[in-house]
Image (cartoon, rainbow, N blue to C red):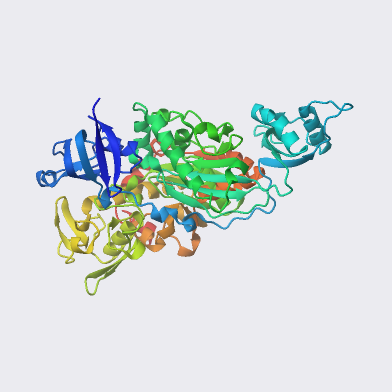
Length: 628
């Protein structure tokens, strides 16, 4: 098979490619990200690249005009290698992860008064063997543990192989690291201990755990000191899987392709490994002292993390292969940690209400407080929980990618260059933009989209059907798909085109917010309650960080309640994983939360579709729900 060098700009990376491979596949081989919302199916038009030199096999199509094609514009998933080529990836098609790499994006205030992690260390001072005491090394260890009232511990074969040399090299002063498997079916039973490693005792035996949030879009990790309870700043990055699709359905479809499941698993493991490297400068050698990883993610992400085929998640009756997970050696999955590091994965409730929500409910404390609470994690697959210490119901709303900038012509993630805030002066007809990073605009993110729509609706530029009113503003103009609103002209942007909001974009947002709102209604009415009965609303996830509550209420995304009833708790999935890493008692509570939550499949719940249709207006067909 002939191979040819493909040069990617602006990375200036050269990758050898086989004839017939798509540019998307070649980029993937070099771990270079090109946006592909549809997972490379050729139906989203987001993977635009520019052919600077050479040739590729391609033709104009649905998303490329003859003029675009003449300028060298190609779709990476449809352009095939036929010789050497130089490919430029424009900013629209790249992923800027700088925003996610800030430690502040993953930091929460955490307190665990007395750490009681699932891995604990015991310092053993043993009598060396002698003519009068020729017990085996393991008998000697077990006797010392028994003297500390630690009985009946099992031992890993790897630890047993390590034991003889470690005992003698340390003059029989060692630290035994013991992983305690907590009984879940009969919690009154004592935990089951298993020795996973021996290390020389230094008298200063700090040891670590890792909390991991495996999100569809981003991955965050946080290092914690299991001995002291100290919590280090978290770090994050884009999930490398986004090159194969921006939502879980696209990922599931891609997993069904040849080698798709393995490629998806490799990408998320690669992302985690990159993040692990970022702790090395501050905590050199910490990996050998890391004994526990606690991970949370939605049901699909959990399956892809461990390499389990998720295809049945999207097939009726929507039964995932697993909702709870065994203890797993993290190194077995390819994580760059010590062989003794144990991975625990949060349990999920259903195919679309995953361990990230269980972890979030744990972090929010919803399960132990009397107030009736609505917990919302807004994203592509928006999840909601309603309840209190006595009961909980939950559901997943197929909101689509609009809240993360997907399905929007000029949409992008919340990264530098994204229009995030918007102010419209009705008196002058002028508007003002707030852009993340203070740079020239590149697009509009999900929270920015909400702010624009809310402001235009209040100003009368947009009607309740989500249609722009012709002649209402100098920025309303005809576009390819009907009327559109010009946010920023090309000469002011860092991209070579106007940034405009189309009526199709607004329709996508209305569908997304309607899916969420009708979900709240359905869960509440299923238990005989109304919106006015809610005492608290907790918003979680990265999207909520910059969400303007009043604007979200204006468009009908959030219920019409006093603003002081709303609170934001950040990355609740990472927070819950952190708490569970520090405390085995808290980890066990995750399973009681899972059992307490009653899942509703909204599409099968009577009345949901009627409520969904009624929500397809701004803010709603029933204005009384919003004080109108």
